[in-house]
Amino acid sequence: MKIHFYWLGMMLATIFCVSASAADLNRIEVEKRLAKADKTHPANLRRKDLKGLDLSGLDFKLADLWGADLRRANLSNSDLSGLNLDLTVMSKINLSGANLSNTSIFGVHLGGSDLSHANLVGSRFIANLDRSNLSHADLSHANWGVDMQNQPMGLMRVSLNNVNLSGANLSDANLNRALLRHANLSGAILKNTVLYGADLADADFSNADLTGADLSDCILESANFSGADLAGTTFKGVKDKSVLRGLASSKNLESAIFK
Image 1: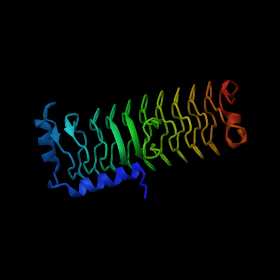
Image 2: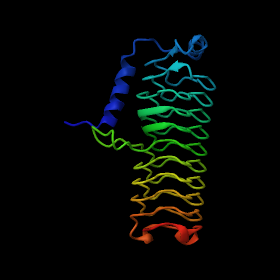
Image 3: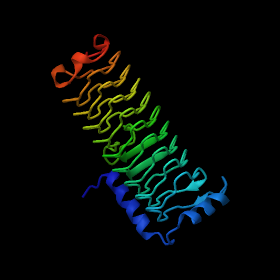
Image 4: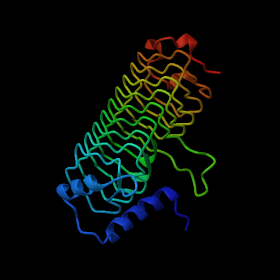
């Protein structure tokens, strides 16, 4: 039976964490490993069970967290910039205010997590973030879109269904083919954001800035654009504008592209 690579990644992460031989670490032990780390010898937290720990405000830039179990851990205001967090276990994690710029998170379940006010600039995510809080997060220049040339085992995409992206900055981000059903993007900045082929059914773009955004070939049934700035926004593939809510109160509708 064919198993989708995304879910295979989920299972591998679980297996790795369960099979980890090291005992649980507490915050003090983690801090000691971080203090001794350097570029040649990063802090070894690989596949370690760290779930539920308060690791807030720590600097993990010189740590190896690949495959670690971080479920329900508190990493708020921590620095994880530039790390490879592929196949970590991170559901319901607290990453509010954390620095995740240029970080890679692939094949990870972050459902129900808090990434509000997080720095996600230039990050690369292919993960499940359903029901997570990303309000006022900075996703500018993030690449969370599908790589169509690297899909040997089925379509792998970021899932952002029912997420809170209100007030978030997604300028120049790539979220092509992302799942954003029922997502709250009210007041978000989406200047030049690529959402090509995304599922945006019932998404809320009220008062958002969609200047130059690409919404070509998206699923847009019942998406709300009340008060949104649609200057130069591309809606190619939309044959029936009636499926879009709030167009009458949107801004710069005359310069939006529907052909």
